[in-house]
Length: 111
Length: 116
Image (cartoon, rainbow over all chains, first blue to last red; front, side):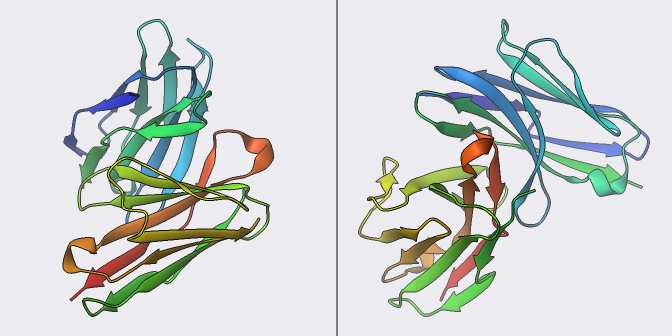
């Protein structure tokens, strides 16, 4: 059974801090790792990572995948209160054609 | 990006009634849609995979007679919670995969179901 584990479960930081969110996975026929941000309602897509060691960047957010050690990190620099959300990662099983989500990391950024 | 519309966003119903939730892909055809359930402060739990024109595939522990899924067209999937009970109260989210975009899912805005 595919498994995705995120840590920490929750995190409280102050504006301007840098945070690193972790995601480890055990997914058979693994093809990609996806990160989503969920505020009050639907998750919104952040990144999809398929290759090891290649950093993807979008503004203050960046992410990288390590397919040897089976994990990914999501970094957020110079955090803002608007970054407060639950961050979900998910591993894609190419044979089963499905995503398995981790439990999420709840980030709270205080002013 | 692709847009998925989910309705209603919130529904309150009496115990024993049935509730239908719609999930539509607005600007693409979705051969596969997924239905998730999310409890407060918990992650998304896949309930079932809905394939256009065929029966849905339910995850272990999800009652197919309780959660009826119909994917009658390439742009619409519905989830009906039959004879709802308070324990069915939850946040339900659908997502869809656009054919050419592989594993990247687009999510609906979710439905908060409260059963009194």
